[in-house]
Amino acid sequence: MTRNSLFVLGGARSGKSRYAQARAEILAGPHHFVATAEAFDDEMRTRIARHQADRDARWQTVEAPRDLPGVLATLNASNAVVLVDCLTLWLSNLILADADVDRAEVELCNVINDFDGCIILVSNEVGLGIVPANALARRFGDAAGRLNQAVAAVAAEVVLITAGLPLTLKPAPQPR
Image 1 (cartoon, rainbow, N blue to C red):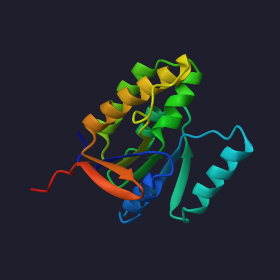
Image 2 (image 1 turned 180 degrees about the horizontal axis):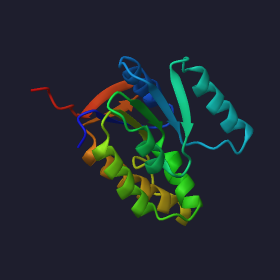
Image 3 (image 1 turned 60 degrees about the vertical axis):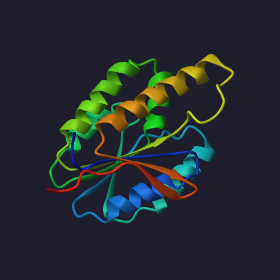
């Protein structure tokens, strides 16, 4: 487990992206924003533009809609600050591409474990609502739950954001 990994979970519009970005921006080093979203409609283009406007010139954006582990491996450096937003969009892309989700999850966790810099990952907590009525939504919810559990297990610190407020689920290890 890398000592410099933070996993930020929360519901839609909970403040998780804002919190993750603020945590990243207090760190020195080259800042990389790894975007997993794809803009297939005007509403998503607007969301992406809003997130881009929130980042200043220190951020380099890298797109990784499907090969997130591969992209993260190329950014791995001891001084790197990498923010991934978000894992559930990445997962959705994989499911819609009929990719091997289980293998991708293992590859992602391996990259997190081996990461030398600081890596911050954002994900939606989707398991707090009712069981969806259709098979694809249930498959996604199940896969998101498994992915979030796997990432939480390897992350050094896990924070849940609700109504803009952070709740530490797994505190960061203290320096010796």
